Picture 1: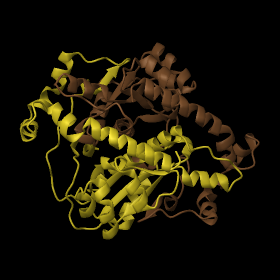
Picture 2 (picture 1 turned 90 degrees about the vertical axis):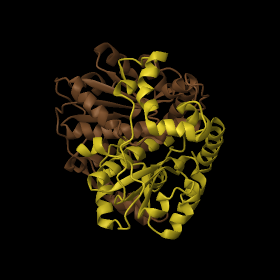
Picture 3 (picture 1 turned 60 degrees about the horizontal axis):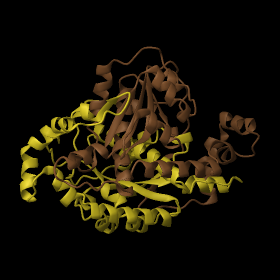
Picture 4 (picture 1 turned 90 degrees about the horizontal axis):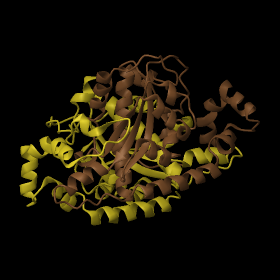
Length: 244
Length: 244
């Protein structure tokens, strides 16, 4: 399981396709992941068709992986299938609410990550697209998702055509808390973020964006408060439209 | 990676402790998981202390694993640490909204699942506690989580003291959709749920609960609409209280 520690996201893929039997095998592994009440409240939509990939490009802010990867997987929370089973079995489902949006998201994301681990072990490269929850409505439209089905993450998959450097991570001390949450003093933050801030690429990033600090690149350029609020509204609207 | 396909949830553990260096090693693997903007918007609270485990028991509906497991890990969405860094770097964070609750949940759950895969490869057994989002407020209180930190899942971990049967799963055909979502006809549902409904344990489950169908055990006993709505309210309230 060395892969877990040496992995990195892959954004450029060879032209080779992924054989359906390989993809199915990886998805079988994903389906062994823990799931609340063994309800498996998720679905996976496989996109291979170039025209449909093109339609998915704008909601994913035209990230080139969407068109370049042989396979795009949209992992969706799915309370529709389970509810349909209930309705056909004289049972009244009650899963159109926030709790089951979140419970479904947990099921879905855990299965997605098992898929990625299995894919990387099989020599494939993956990239998560966080844009999925920024523009859920056009994705819902393209994939024709019914009520109680919601796209929560998208993964592009293919055989790697690049070997990028592994990105930095915060020291484990930044992430782990013993018994209770330890709050961070200014000294803690300085120490824990020192390595990240010292990296040449991050210093360049600050310069390129004409900012004073790396944090400002995040707050003023990459993930701005006004954008975050705009996309929160869009997400809430889509959630309601899908019946949650 | 045979583990992925042969795994099963473990709810009974040997008394053996988990060495801190082993736990840290698994958490290091978890931290290599993909994360939006390399922001790592999560924290992990480790509970080993018996008194604190006892305090976590009621919010987890007294599931015995919480007290019996040597280690309980609460995986938390954490926008607090990142925001604190911003504030100390003349940057104005804007992550107190729904989009970043969901983005943080994605980061957190993917890391949690990598932890579980690594733990199982190392011979440990794990159990996810879905109760985390049912009773977030008492968990927040016990673990002293500040604003913008939110418990999204809990994992009990230990060396297995049982070897249960692997549970059934729906056929892959039930989960996977080619290009667009295929809706389910009544015949589809009958076929896809036939195996699950045929299992002796599930038939017994229906009898024990004096129900007519397996689906009714879910809707009338295990995950009732009224409970789901009650827990949705509690979740929303806790989300707002934590500043999202």
